[in-house]
Length: 169
Image 1 (tube, rainbow, N blue to C red):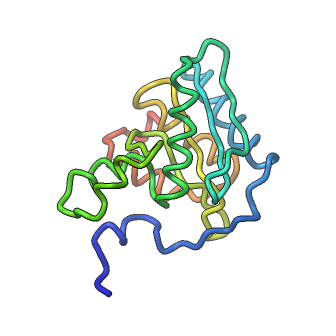
Image 2 (image 1 turned 90 degrees about the vertical axis):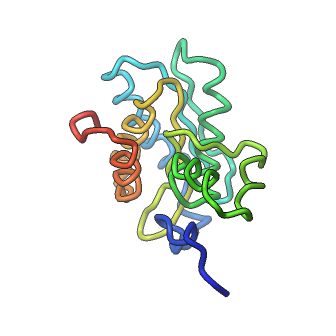
């Protein structure tokens, strides 16, 4: 079978681990991101799912937009299911890969900045989504992943591609 270009996008080769994500890890992700959100002056919703896309934790900060509840969960699921930052799917849908087009219409699939796979010990253990701002969704989610000690290479590649200078992370 011929490998498609999108199959080489960071990090599809990583296996899933369906047992490592738990509430304790989810709360570390949320607290790390929440601290950054407060520092940046944003009211966010933060969502964590396991590798199967099942919601583990959802936190809506006071006065966060109600729409961000659904968007944060969709970003987390998209990142877990798609194995890449949610933002990367936008370029893939615009490309010349017709077999990907139906994913764009998948319930809850999103291509906004702020959804990242949670990678620990070389395995995808879940997804993390932040919603409530614009470009700040990325650095806020990154702070949560950093607090957990997750692999940041895909996050950093995404933020660089988005054009965010490192001093804003």
